Length: 252
Image (tube, rainbow, N blue to C red; front, side, top):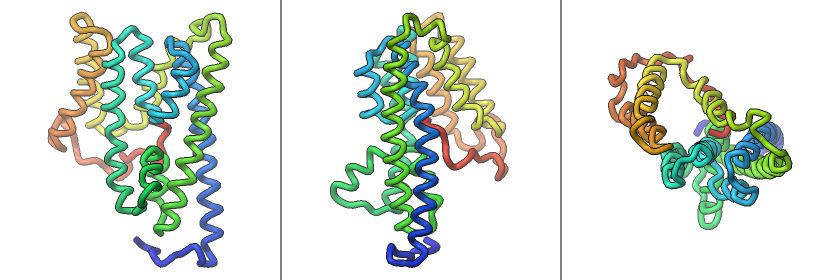
């Protein structure tokens, strides 16, 4: 690591700490705003306020949460929704492998830190040039997002519950819109576009023949096959440097 010798007694540490904390709070606020949507969508899909808040506290993975409530709200089996959420959350396991070598957390910190392994905390940690800064970025970003995401979930859920019919405001159409917003930045290169197209075709073609929610799993299977197929699969090309998505992602 470039500046491994940097320590908390270094004169520049206070400056680094303030900069990281500022960024962490900014990420938390932006993500919290997105949490309002989850709370509203979850209640509009039929979950109670308690169920919605428990999902955010325990699962704490935005994309997985949206997938679960979207499938269940659409009449799909809860197990199908859970399986889809699990597939979407696999990436966090890979994040954990990378962060374990970087942060080197021990004992209870390792257990607590596992709950905070998300897109934002990972990106903020990897952007630092010293281990102390990476650790501080991980904890400050993870806790900021966790607190504001859960607070926003509660506010969104309570506000939507107070409405006579949330569908009047179009909230029943919010889950697919949210997924499109999450997916759009990742469709800059040819390969993800082809994978998305094939997955969509498979999902649409399977709708008349399988239970609700299963088409989503089949579409996810297409992505898994594409991943194992490697760079030659699905007519991909070598990605250009500009094809990469931005480091800090919305709670996907």
